[in-house]
Length: 144
Image (cartoon, rainbow, N blue to C red; front, side, top):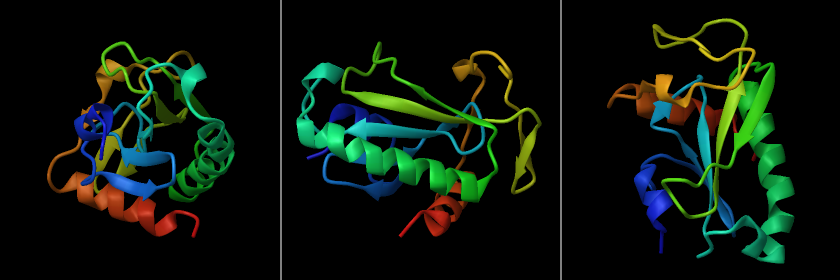
């Protein structure tokens, strides 16, 4: 059963890939093009309390995130933000970072915080057309 954080970020509609302990979702608000949410499926609200198996699987998941996003857009840096202030389940906001404006389907996606901290509040909301287009393209490029 999905936890509240998964549901808030659109699970299962925004799902890129589900793993044993984690799921990777397209972030409905895009502070940078290709922003994701990596959510632990375990019922924990503290990173130190997730299972050893979840920690172990994190290596594979982050490798696939970085490989998939690099195929989608050649990011210059990648940020994993574990904020958990509003959504208490263990999760990361995964933000590919770019020094230049990125374009997708005719829309411009600036990285307003570059080269400093990302500006989460400046995210572009994905509408009913953009969400499936980004989701489909990232899934197509995701490691098999």
